[in-house]
Amino acid sequence: MSVRTRFAPSPTGLLHVGNARAALFNFLFARHHGGAFLLRIEDTDRARSTQHAVDVLLDGLAWMGLEWDEPTVYQSARQARHAEVAHALLAAGHAYRCYCTADELRAMREQATAEGRAPRYDGRWRDRDPSDAPAGAPFTIRLRAPQSGETVVHDLVQGEVRVANAELDDMIILRADGTPTYQHAVVVDDHDMAVSHVIRGDDHLTNSFRQAQIYAAMGWQRPEFAHLPLIHGPDGGKLSKRHGAQSVVEFRDQGILPEALCNYLLRLGWGHGDAEILSREEQIALFDLDGVGRSAARMDYVKLAQVNGVWLRRAGDARLTAEVTNALIARGTPVDETAAARILALMGGLKERAKSLLDLTDSAAFLAASVPLTFEPKAQALLSPENRMMLRDLAAELSPIEPFDAAAIDTALRRFADRVGLKLGQVAQPLRAAVTGSTMSPGIDATLAALGRDETLARIGAICNG
Ligand code: GLU
Image 1 (cartoon, protein in one colour):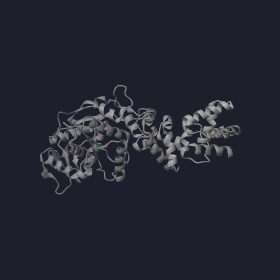
Image 2: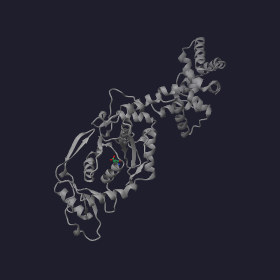
Image 3: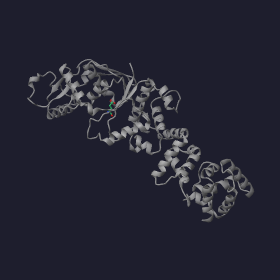
Image 4: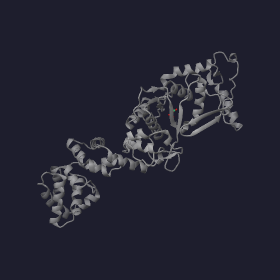
């Protein structure tokens, strides 16, 4: 059997980490087995499923690098097929028309609640003669579910789960307005898309019993099910706003790289020995469902930041420069070609310290600034009258260096420090303050080299003459 997985989100306006992880696992499982990964947008709730909500999903998947293999399936476009299958079940006697009114159903529910029973349909139209039906009255179509025996699902993560059929009532598969219910639409679509493995959050575990009954009634082969434990907050409670970011866009806005988020989400609930940092190729090579844990995972934002740091250091300088340039421009700082070249030149040093693209952007901003710089208080404090005098002498030392590169700058700084009887740090810190406006930057030699001779001298000059 060829492996075909699908991600089947309902467009809600965000791509939650739990869903993002389900998408990733479906993708990796399909790739690992040389199968296909499909996308189905479950947009039957037309009010919620705006184009914006759909775009959020598509953009999130694209950002995570999860490409799907066939044209996107929109569930709303398949309603005629859902109705066709419901009517086929009806014709085969596996489903029946129910003419209960909303009032009757409400009374049924209220009575069950009053008697301390779970509210469920009492099957009153199950065996009733269709000729009893009130002429022209609206009806729903309900599955004629088995009333004895058990429905058993061999879940690839949760193991064997079973329910007594007596516990499940005859669910509606087609509403009076002809639209399918979730359970029915999912089964028809998964069948028609030849999905071999349904991998999704374990909030859907009990749905698989209902869905199994529809497969059985149609005589269709059931896919394998794999229900993933949910992602909780760091304190074990339901992941919510108070814990931090929950959606893919929020993580992106916090400067998390997509490969870091994917790597982190993969490790959250899936393991392969001690392997922590895995490239996409390694993930595909190693991923399988037997590595998925059964207990709920806890989101660890600190760990995510560490993983992000690792991926930042692995990321190419040109790509990070493009990211930082765009971020600076979005903040209102113009970045011309010269500034972009400086950022690129220093990127190797900048990315060593960053935990996020936001840090990286902050630390690169001085390269796009122009004199006069603004100074952080700690930097300002270093620009004492004596240090300004020292910097003026230093400028004379630096000015003739040829080539103006890190090695030559380093030599010149050491020579200068020796000559004036200062430690290298006593020279480098005021110099750093003067040219960056802060007290932190990559090595001062590399920093000056990235700025270039003219800009370095202009920045020092602005301090000494200011
Ligand atoms: N559309 C459902 C959801 O977003 C998922 C359906 C499924 O995976 O079976 O929760």
